[in-house]
Amino acid sequence: MSKIMNSVGYQKGRRLGDIEIDDISGVIKQPETFVWVGLHEPDETLLRKVQAAFGLHELSVEDARKAHQRPKIESYGDSLFIVLKTAQLELGRVIYGETHLFAGANFLVTVRHGPSPGYTQVRERCESEAKMLARGPGFALYALLDFVVDNYLPIVGQFEKDFDDIEEDIFKGEFDKLAIERLYDLKRQLLELRNAALPVTDISAELVRFHEHLIPKELRAYFRDVQDHVSRLVGLVDGMREMLTTAMQVNLALVGHSQNEVVKRLAGWGAILAVPTVVFSLYGMNFAWMPELQWQIAYPAVLGTTLVGSIFLYYRLRRARWL
Image 1 (cartoon, rainbow, N blue to C red):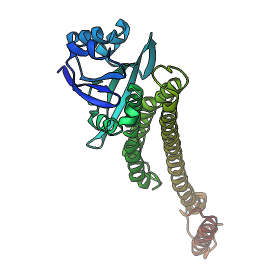
Image 2 (cartoon, helix red, strand yellow):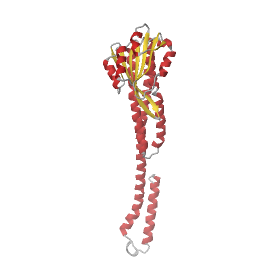
Image 3 (cartoon, one colour):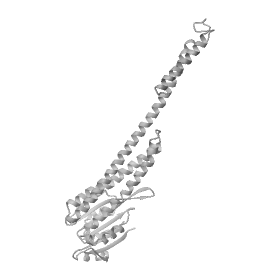
Image 4 (cartoon, rainbow, N blue to C red):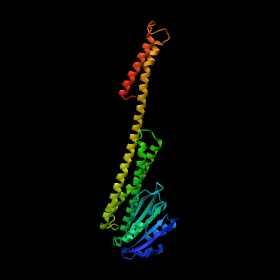
């Protein structure tokens, strides 16, 4: 359902109060004033009102209406359009949403789609730092980026716990289809999180290098901090993905080794059984006395020799660790 979550004006970092959409055009004309509007899954009519109030570009509004966009930053004249992938844990699963940001020198509009977290905490944080908020919507934009990135970190922690739970099954040396499926699913989720987080690095880098009208020099260090957080997070994700790949390979190697041990034992027992098989098949033991037809102690001698040969072969195979 289309909904205006917040529409608040700020002047010199101080909250002016709630602003109606129809009154925005007049408020943003005041010096050192900007308006921060928060929307949740707005419909076409509401977005058109916001577009008219802030002079937003047609293409960016179309993207915000349709959602399902890749993370990106685009410049339309004096305003920016930013798409972020949000993530949160829900019953042990990662749920992704989208936040679209319209930022200008005197406004900031957030458009949430899907199960993305609300930004009440971000607004409260900004309002508690009036000195920083007085620098304009750039600080609020930083706080939003920082909040989205911070929400990625607990997910990585959950992934590490999931991997620890699977690890015990992986190193048993037995093929466990369920464990392999869980590993594959975890690796897929890591890739999905990486694809959501990595573009924030490029977004932060562009905000640091360009758009000085929106991001003054004194705020650039904050965006570099966000960039650093994302880089470390991506490093953790890449490290875990490498560990998962290695765990799969080790499991397959252990399974192969275990199978080789079984084959070796079967081959060893086959070699032992080959001794009496050859001897008995050679003579058949179908004649009196045997072998050499008239040798009276032949039968017990052959049995004894076969037994000694089998025991000797068993001993040698045991020493060679084939049995």
